[in-house]
Length: 302
Image (cartoon, rainbow, N blue to C red):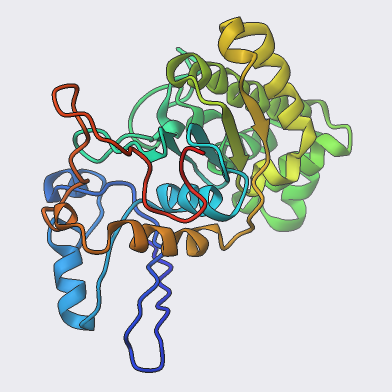
């Protein structure tokens, strides 16, 4: 498992802002083993706190990124949004009524694993036709290698002769499209369409008022991608839901998860529910909460 760990401490070691880390799952060692995530199980927060003598809270990187955008970026003032990142893989997060939606097992928001092509390629998770299997950097690299080996893309054949077939990436496919290569153009159109199709589903399923689409591939595609998503949502989603949703780029850069580490900690610090290995209990109809917004500056219903 690849980790990016950043510790922000005061001079007297009195403050920890948070940890940005690449995680697929939160809770349960059996589930973690299924995804080959080692040394991550219930109790990790307690062991980390014991080692540091400081509060520690863990969450999936895309959830923390969504907190960053909510507090300081494109999600400010919007309590209902979906965050999608399109990069080497595809991930996401759901924010509803000012709260991260974790689901009962802490696993909700794996937006890269929604099906977009019933007979599409097999995903790394074992499913078929998932968004990540079609539109991620890993997927584009796979298709680039296949096109170079089959000789269907003059651009990729030439690039492979320079860098080697195994080194072809999604960036090469995007550059091939810009160079007018038909095979590369077809692959990029397919990827953009898959992202747009997934966003139609997100709009219909979650009724967000904003979808934030970031990540290195989405950032590089810019309005070429975002305009297609907007048009597809307007055309194919339920009209009432499509009328109220904005499709926007993120405002924070590559360190978005670091920005989200502060609201992650500040919203959970002192809440004993987060010491039970799972999210705080959500309000029920029998016992409605008076304030559903997360206690994070700049993040909640106005």
